[in-house]
Length: 112
Image 1 (tube, rainbow, N blue to C red):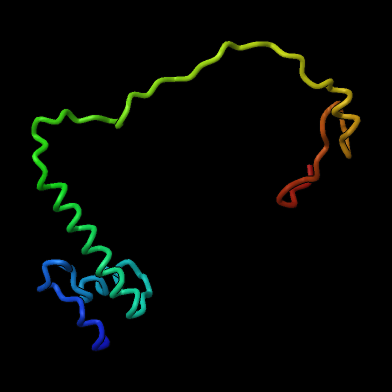
Image 2 (cartoon, one colour; image 1 turned 90 degrees about the horizontal axis):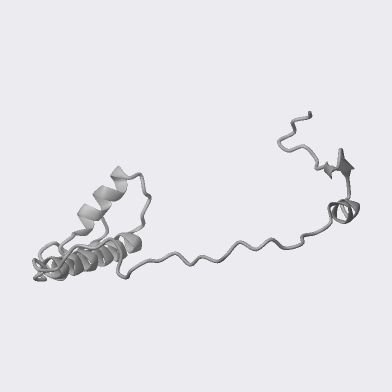
């Protein structure tokens, strides 16, 4: 590792992940990170872990677990039958029609 990577070490309370750990995980994940990315990710992941530690420190024993932060409700409407487009008019505007249906070119080179 380049000497500038030593700026982030596991001795710092603000950065519990060292660049060596990040580089090792990146190698295991087959990620090709340059020195700047390794330093940046070490700092970002350390910040995330510090935030998780802050959340873990909260006294949440009396808080009921929930699946949603707010109550969900379905917004439904009555089904109303409306007049749609005339099939003949729609097919008349199509570039190709076969057996009263749209005719489209085959996909993936498969001919019927």
